[in-house]
Image 1 (tube, rainbow, N blue to C red):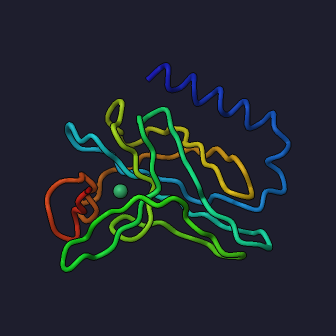
Image 2 (image 1 turned 180 degrees about the vertical axis):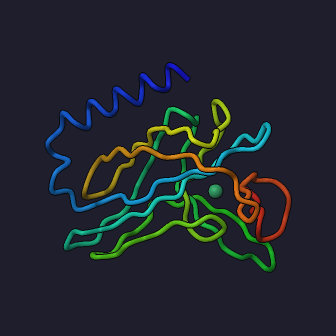
Length: 163
Ligand SMILES: [Cu+2]
């Protein structure tokens, strides 16, 4: 935890020291993740991404010190089973505001968490956009809701399976 905080501080320092943040065409609104349960290995973060630019952009990658691998995922129905799939990029049209929500569509998958995500905690998430470049956000961990458990196990629409 202490290390994580140091890392977060370092990222913050970098962000403050970079005037390039100003005038960015991509603005991140909400950035939240659900608290994990038990020994749950994976988590998911949900962002609100606004493309204020005049052209199309795309989220192409993400990384965070809390997880070994961070992927951009989407969910879709296959027959009557909701499945998750990794995306190479998440397109953002000019003027589009994309709101990720638990239990539907796109999310940022946190794979192989280094420690459980606890409600109230925050962690840094580095994002890279094709045109806007790199952006760092602070993700807030919220209490686990009953409707959107994201444990990668089980079946049915409320508990998407991982391939
Ligand atoms: Cu996923």
